[in-house]
Length: 305
Image (cartoon, rainbow, N blue to C red; front, side):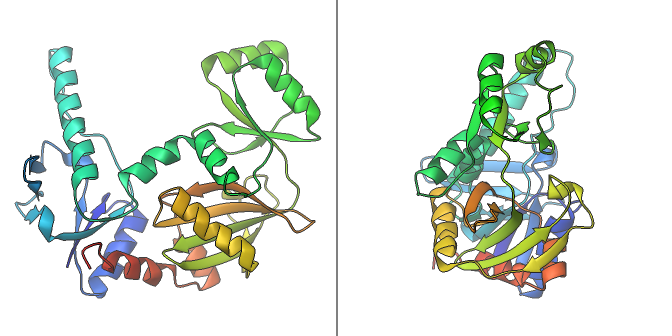
């Protein structure tokens, strides 16, 4: 059984999953898209869908021989510097087009798929899709209109803000943030996501196929990712929330994910986001959950069976 890992050995999670898959008897290779087209060769025939990857070192993998792919990270192709910028842009566009094609046309079991990753980029749409399932989400405004931002923040007892797509940690809105000159300067650069601050506890839930693992994250930081001392305490979710987890995973076209919740003091669960390629090693070590083995089991399952 041949399995690809989209990523490289420098990523601890990619390396961890590769080792676990090998121990389970799979033949595993990295597909590091940074090495295309300089060190990786790709061939594909649209009329037959026959194709192959030739990896660094000369190993050739026919698409039909690949059973599944674990998407850890996707990097743009590397094109050496050319004197003519137009030629370099054409070369980059051609290489990217081939990669995008292969990531969608390769008839294997993806964990997770190109479509799921593209949907993840549209986080406002993701929030709305989850809301349509009947799941509670925070009161949210995505905007670069200063007047509407100020009005929204006035209606909340506390407001947090974060990038629309991601990249930095969540912060509380202060009066300084809402100073008109400062706000104008910031919002001319990009829109921002503003949300009501929800008091309560952080819960992270991993969904792997039909398996669910959850833990409370006890932290004094607004964004627990900044807190290396955060405590992870295994918890059992109510049955209704577990069903919501499975529904969210399906709606967002995911095979596995980490869902972040905020549990209110009143007992209500509020959806924050779902990550299509979450880190999990520390979480697994702290909780004892068998995330690695569940992920291996999922990757050994193929769409051809």
